[in-house]
Amino acid sequence: MVPRQKRLVRAQFPLVLNEGRRVTSKHFSAAISSKTAGYAVVVPKKLIRKATERHQIKRKLFEILRASKHPFAVIVFLRTAVHGVHYQEMKAEIEKLLASITHL
Image (cartoon, rainbow, N blue to C red; front, side, top):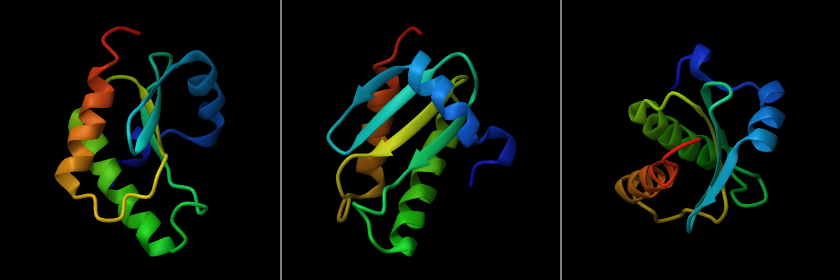
């Protein structure tokens, strides 16, 4: 898990969503802003019904974000169900999303 001080709180979501840039890929959408720092992952119940599966996906995504060590705020939204998508594929897709933002 990401340490509490590295997590983005709900009160900061509007700042990142309004001031940041959006990038999308096949399974994920991300809002990225340089105004603050931290990470958040949103996995809607509409896509993944079971809480255990949602938490498993969140843990994987938090680990990917923690390892990337970017100095800006990132909110990752799940766009489609990721059943059967392996960790390495998720990691490559997230890294490609983050790399697409060269300057903020």
